[in-house]
Image (cartoon, rainbow, N blue to C red; front, side):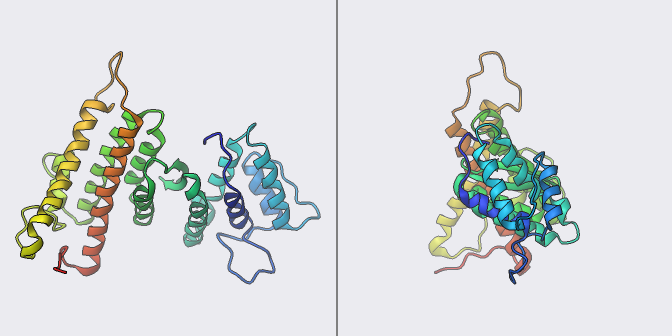
Length: 298
């Protein structure tokens, strides 16, 4: 977490998902409804001693979280513990849609502050989304819905490394593309290509998704333009792969290794995010329509 407290909107979202709302509110709770003793136990699980006493559940929770917020400079990690605890999917095993609603509510509040909650390997993680912006946020949401766990791990690693270890972020951005390609090929029940580097995997995915630059079924007036864009997909992937080889940490780092600028790492993450989002959305469309991607003339 950074040293700047999160906005009051995050506090309000936490109150909503921790308490489940007022007992007199006819609106269905966001997440699950917790009684007073359950709320006290919730905070105890976070290492925080909270007592509701004679107060009402929601005001007491709001007041206690304000105290936690005011102590940010001494224990900013306490807020993170609360966020991760309320997003833990193990609380929602019998109603997973409630868990997703809680995560969605938190992410809507966290977005402006540059953070997002991701469920990776069944555990919640708080990651920065400032390096990726809207594109990477969309990839986060897509992969959460599709349960592409390896892809989620690569996104988490990339975003968490971009400022402090940009070389590792570049390596993770490359792994992100590779993981998406592998996941799609498996979903399509296709074998992995003999050459399993980023170039080989991207080329293996382009064909079955109808994204090959050599396709001949395009309208004449836009054929050259679309082929150029589709060819650019391969170029982007190869560029990120080369950057990983020459500037990432996949092959180790010698003494005096020159660090990549964090902006370059951010560019690699955004480019990888754009490419993978396009692949995922194309695959989704193909599954929905049971047809390859079609490009129609305007």
